[in-house]
Image 1 (tube, rainbow over the protein chains, first blue to last red):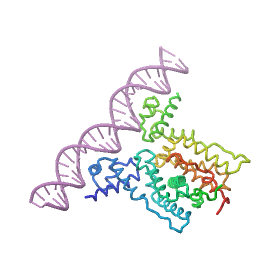
Image 2 (cartoon, rainbow over the protein chains, first blue to last red):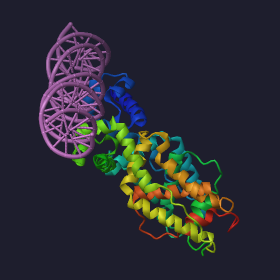
Image 3 (cartoon, chains in turn cyan, orange, brown, purple):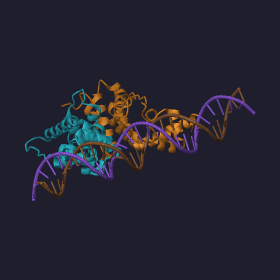
Image 4 (cartoon, chains in turn orange, blue, cyan, green):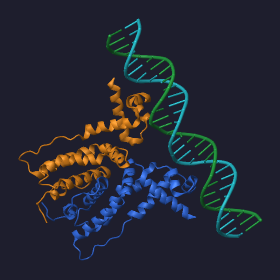
Length: 177
Length: 177
DNA sequence: TCCTAATGTAAGTAATTACTTACATACATT
DNA sequence: AATGTATGTAAGTAATTACTTACATTAGGA
């Protein structure tokens, strides 16, 4: 049954999130209520299980949702909304993000799922429609930076004016020096 | 001789930067050209060696340099300079920062040397003189975010207007909505 | 009912690795 | 010369852990 396969992936995700790549196959098996040997029969080796599990969460949690700017909505409002949404999502997935970040930095993830990089690229892709009005490269960088520091340092105690900090400085020609 | 002790610390720093906490004591010993058992005679165990090594690099590379604002210099200029300096320093120490960040996220570092946190706090401390004019908490966060994303993503290809992005949005009363 | 595929049990293997112990050596101070 | 301190050599230990092998069990479809 493909059922057990999913049980295992689910458990693997949980355990890997908690302990990183160093989680043991025993941990995972017992969490999945499955014999350890079953992991190997289904996934050949730990690394493969890890990649499968990580890929599945990335697909589930970070796949790009297509977005359209409401036709009559001002640029700033749209972007502020996007920023807020992403930001909240990431905070919710904090443990997952921490793990992905850490493993990416350690070089345990292959290039094509280097988390901060793909996250940045997804943002870029999404911001592309605004290319002409906005410095999207630096905006995306700044967003990624904020997201990471939030995950690492916790949420800020003081309110921030998102538009002023993360949007308008990157909008061309506006409030220019 | 305290000489060997330093040799070992130096080697440990290098090896830990390269491989993280998972570096083996053999690695370190051979890099230090010292018998493995010497590590244990001097540092009791691996964790202690790790902490000693890390502490020493943190002291060496990230100790806070006291700064004074030139009396006649405008606020923005001072802060832009500080930002630029820190930023360049961190890029130089990129490998070290990556490792410290990764190990902090993994929870391998004790609270008092949780890297992003102490780095943030150092920034806060340094920015304190500007407290009245600047939202230093969010400024420091934004700086940390940028530094981390730079270390993780590499340096930006497009120039950025530092003052516009990292300084003025946090200065009170200026260009306010 | 029989066969097959999926799973479990249990034992084991081989590699790694932090850390120890016992003994030898070299060097410096007394 | 004697002694102590720092270091090396070599061997070993104990724990962990990814992964294997052999065999038993169960359940579903032909």
